[in-house]
Image (cartoon, rainbow, N blue to C red):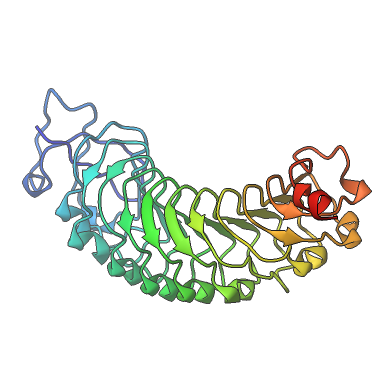
Length: 298
C-alpha cells in the first residue's frame, strides 16, 4: 500500500493512509500508524493550512492529489525519501508561504511554475537532485525572504532576475555546478544578511557589494572568482564572517577592514598581497599562500 499524507483542519497530525481518492469514506486500517477522519461535520480536507511530515520515511513520489489542498500555507516534507518529479498539480498551492522539500531524492528541474507561489517567504530545496538552470522566473517571487537550494546539481548562470528579490534575507546556493559570474547588480539586495554561493564553478570578477549594509555572512569560497579584492567590503558595517578562500582574487586589503568586528575572515589561496596586523591570529584568517608571486617578482 502506498502512503498518502493528509491531516485535519488546523491540526498537525501525521498520517500513513490509503490513496487520497479513496478517502471520502475512509475506513480504519490495521496497518495505519495513525488514523483520522478526513472529513467531518465542519471542515473538509481542502481547508487545511498546515502540513508537516518531516522525517517520516515516505519513500514515494508526491501525489498529484496534493493539488487539492489549495489552502495550504505551510508545507514541510523534508527528510524523507521522496523521489521522482514534482507533479504539475503541486503548483496549484498558490497560498504557500513556507515550502520545505529538503533532504529527499527529487530528480527534476526547477520548473518555471515555482513563480506561481506569489506569497512564498521560505523556499528550501536543499539536498535533492534538482538539475538544469535556475529559471529567470525565480525573480517573480517578490515576497521571498529565504532561498536555500544547496547540494543539488544546478548548472548554468545565476539569472540576473535574482536581484529582483528585494525581500531576500538569506540566499544559499552552495555545492551546485553554477558557472559564469555573480550578477553585478547583486548589491540591489539591500535586505540580504546571508549570502553563500560556495563550492561552485563561478568565474569572472567578484562583484562589489556597495549598500548591502545588512550583510553579515559572505561566503564565496571554492570558485574561480578573479578581480581585485572588493573595496566595498570596508563599508559593510555588519559583516562578521567572510570566506573567499580558494579563488583567484588579487589586489590589496585596505586597513579599514580593521574597523569591522570579524568573527571569521578567510582569504586563503588567493593572490592578495598585504597583511593588516589587525587580522593576525583571527580564526579562519590564512595568509601564507597568498603573496608568493609578489616576493618572486620583487
